[in-house]
Length: 401
Image 1 (cartoon, rainbow, N blue to C red):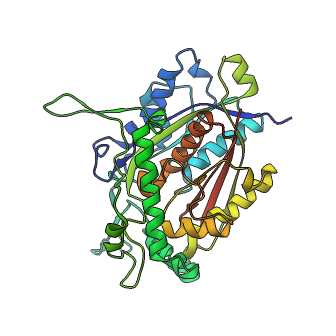
Image 2: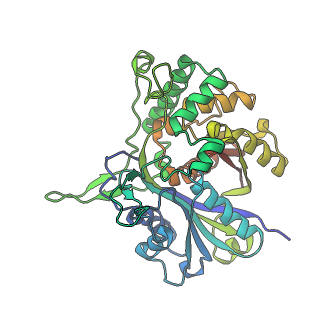
Image 3: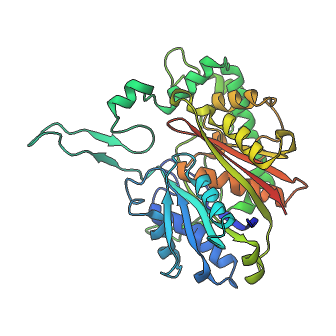
């Protein structure tokens, strides 16, 4: 008989802007911060009992190579007997780590798991492929921060290898999402994030990070630094980053960011054995594929799939954490799902346009946010969903215990 899966604790770092407060922190050290925080917050826990640690990471070309999850568990002080693996489903990596950990528990192969995600886009390196001919003198540097590199020509011919910005423009064109509506959605995300920062709603999620200084005391970084609330007039004045006739701008797109998150998952037996407090139940996870040129539409089919899997309906969801890769794709998804543009259930504390999108962390961040919103409100169900590069979607459903 399959067991229930509970989230007993969750924590994340603040999200740093590109080349911002977290830029000096190595990716493996960054991943270790929420892992160490879980240990500090649960001192009675027997950490040698953890069956496995799964962390999402999309890049894995720099300091996050060589299984960043394993390196982070060792850096955080976990016993060397605790195993760890890094999962890469691009933007959905952190959520996939959570869902995969939940599946292990549900199948009875594990009782205690840690899952989360990390990304330092500021520290993503340039990489250089090997020469294609003997003594070759033509070498190309590839930027690993985001998007395609080392493109497969056959795949490009079959499906195209358009960048993330162009896929958002494709959706804006195909689904008639106006620049005005995108800017309104972006402004709304920023307003919600500003309110959540001011009223302390986001503080529940965050463990402060000490940033060493050469000739001064360490700086305590404790607040997401990507939010930039601007007027609609200012947003409307921004130039397109998707071509002369495009409508995607820096103001209605998510950021390039740094951050890490982790949570403790347990079976019913583990909850009893280790005297844990189950707070939120993971009901199910689903993934699905879409055309790469409109990768941002992934949440539509994935949401429908996970709701069918769990026997629930969109109307049952009290919170909808939809990762805002771009306002265009967010609006196209919500409209396809039959939601109003300003449905109050959508990202109540702000989304990735305001808070940022550290790729491997983002799925864990929005799940952590949904977790805290559930336990601090009368809400019962939460849907977490996001699009994924190369044309996929992922979705997770939570229930308050």
